[in-house]
Image (cartoon, rainbow, N blue to C red; front, side, top):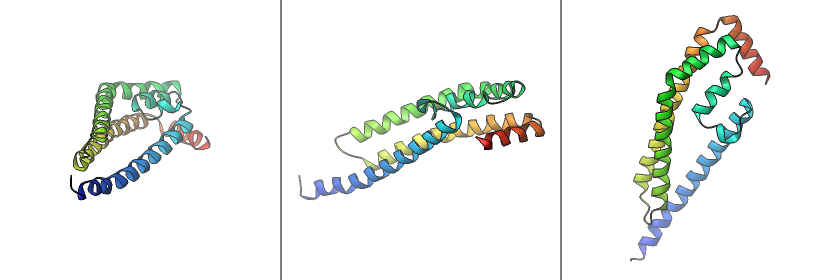
Length: 150
């Protein structure tokens, strides 16, 4: 082992630790805010599979049926994406536990997690748009006023 190998490893360690800490703080603040706004248990606040049904529970019965149908149309895709997120997270953990850090592989694995999450977000956006497009304007305005008051 040369004298530069330990230094090279430690050079990557601090930026990775700072990036990891920053990402964790960002994700934690997002989850706590979402949990608080939707009155969800914290463990449920990061999964679209749990958020959409809970958000639909705030709607009037007529509108809830619309939202539930929009969610049901995408449920299989959301489940597939959630499995992809879990697999990608497991890969990140595996890479971070490896004896030798491979920053390029870690970066690629983190981008994979982001890609899966982005796909889930797109499905959620589609479900929300399908729902609000079907709700009459006056009920939609009343819903938004109630939501803002929370």
